[in-house]
Image 1 (cartoon, rainbow, N blue to C red):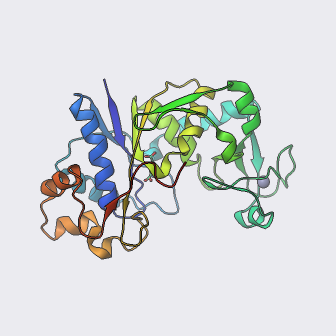
Image 2 (cartoon, rainbow, N blue to C red):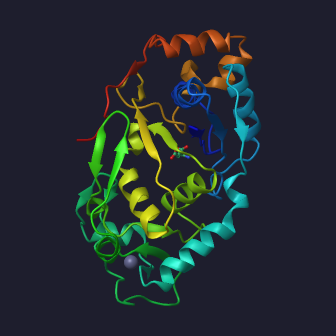
Length: 285
Ligand code: GLU
Ligand code: ZN
């Protein structure tokens, strides 16, 4: 049974790019008589606006999609804590008190996900009075698992190469999990068999595959789809003025647009004026 999901963060209204992502995940499940799940990724405390989740559901129904709700991330904190404790006990995590500015000042190498942490705090080399995040000791983690691969339906089989990310944060200073830890655990708990999302998150799958191995979780397949780009050639962003430019779903819905017809056009690759669908993979190798 194929199980897919759409996992929006309620930190801004959904736009056409989200509609496309939800439709891809929905259709891949439904075509195979599978299940399509909606999970609200609301552990980014500072930026989360819970009231947006209702709009998300109205937007998806307006597009003609049918889904099953699974629990919001904020109800799953125990799962994240237990996993972090396990990795800590196994000596795979270390505390890091560095701020972004401090890391930047060291002029670190830049990987596909931004700055590669230079390991300043490794070996208990930090001030215990400052708030700490927990980072994965990537070299140790890889030595533990040995070589791994993951499979994307479009890109094929890919060797895991998480070194390009350095020692990623798994527990944030301000949240009980980072995106990487939370999403990996959630997909396992929810029984997701095909992780469907935009190709801007393609590289993150290296890290997720490694975490699955360390935490003995089932291994799904992945499907990274192309991104919708605006007139400036950049992907539509929630925080940008996409909504103001007429690409916000709630805005279109409230203006009386036919959501099902819009979904049909997106399925056929007919993008509204000013929008292009980027070829796969986007911004990667
Ligand atoms: N919550 C993430 C976002 O809104 C998506 C996570 C995922 O699909 O893996 O960008
Ligand atoms: Zn540090």
